[in-house]
Amino acid sequence: LDQRAEDHPINVDEFKDWLVQSTQEHGYVSVRPAYERSKTIGKRSPKKAEEHKYAWNKSSMSQGLRRMQYAVRGDVVMRADELAAEGKPIIYTNIGNPHSVGQHPITFYRQVLSLCDLPAECGVDHPNSTQLFPADVLERAIELRNIVGPSGTGSYTNSQGLAGIREHVAEYIAERDGHPAYPGDIYLTNGASAGIEMILNALISSDHDAIMIPIPQYPIYSALIARLGGRKIGYELDEEKGWNVSREELERRLNEAKKSGFDG
Image (tube, rainbow, N blue to C red; front, side, top):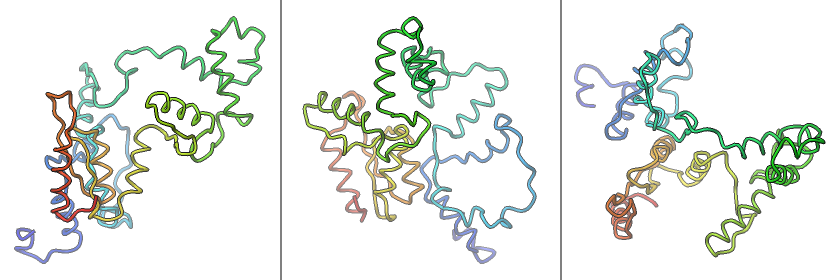
């Protein structure tokens, strides 16, 4: 910051630039150059004005969002897309996407989904349904259709998710863990990422709130913590012990965070 101020007073925009850069993750690499040169995202509109002339720009936007980086969709992936566009063989391992690397869809799930979406007379109530679909598929589809109700799969559900599905989840947890679980305490989310975001949104209220996350980690943890203005406290997983974590490591990292003035 002192170097920037050698020949002129620092304005607000320059200070925010410096603040974002100084608080980004170690090893941060901006994806903007890769994004600008990418030929795989499609045609973009020509720039009509300088960035600072827009009401929403890098200074007025969320500075947490500027600091955020999501490696799963970052610079390496953009470069891989460029190479793939050139005809080079690429195996993507940045995200759980088995179909993209050759795994065939599981027939049972596809058949059940189709019967849930189809009108009853074309699916579960069709006179030839037992010839078109296996018995276990029909049984599961009928059960799910009863849970969904007459409004069908295209309608909104209870905010926590369909009650019948939550009952199944509670039964599974109780059987697995040997501990009672209750449908009213269960929330169904649109995948793990949505659930993680909901929890972190509720937990982080200031830049003194710290979240303990494993190292190595799923990158959405650090990305969302940065976006929400929280602090990341990493605890190391032990490869020699099957990537487990010890109580001692957790307590050591927790005590370090408390000494630094963070809230947990």
